Length: 367
Ligand code: PMP
Image (cartoon, rainbow, N blue to C red; front, top):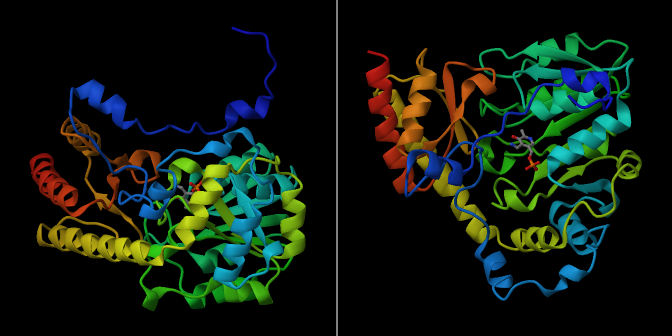
């Protein structure tokens, strides 16, 4: 045992239990093909424009990246109709969540999160010794009224997610307006929209419109999901320019690498292929949902690119059997739903194989 004195609170942080890699599973079960449906990635992958751009490699590696992401910033500000200085980029939105917490929270403050929710919120708050107040979901949805009710004088940040991970449920326009109107303006409301592009237009509200009215709102989005470049690590936040400028002071200068900046820019230029993928994913999700209904298997209606499906008390066994046959899904015990699995929607032929295999296993272990 080393004698190094690690800060005591670190040992009380929850562990992040990473999902296995495709290579691990191939090796463990001697498989030729493995389908990773466990991390909500976009299996359709990035815009072909990115592949084309990097076809001949990337010669500018010797230079540091542009620490202000100037070209990308300009493009994104034009596309979204927001000022350039109201954008912060990070090494994934994970890093923006961490910076927000580092900038605002301390021992005397608290953060309110729905429970369960995306684990990085809690971890980043605990790192700053802040209290984490967890408000249970109500019928798989974030309970906005209960969240507003439990605000107290020490509340500094509230994390909301739409669509929510791991349930895929959304916050409505009425609910977000209720939160914005009824939460003090010295509390930062973070609206994490990592999966917003998968929400059909009729269920979506324009969150950016509220930024003009509420300087305590921060909207977060990512290039990891719809744009299919999770491996490059780039996400962004949109908020009041003074808040953004202060949070940015915490940032290491070169966290967003050059390849990620170029790939993000090219992604923003390819609405056509990205829109096509979104349509297919929504369609595939509907197909899977219909099959589950036919077989009387419960699931949560999802507005995202993944779906939370009830597996029952033999969940761990079902997950193991899926793995043996080359399908990686996220076990609900890591997500606060022990009797469920979370499954990313994949390509049509893979979804089809998964659906029939899962239904058979479900029947076998729940009969
Ligand atoms: N927010 C939510 C709700 C997520 O599910 C994820 C990734 N799983 C993230 C943020 C982080 O995304 P990234 O760091 O890849 O931008």
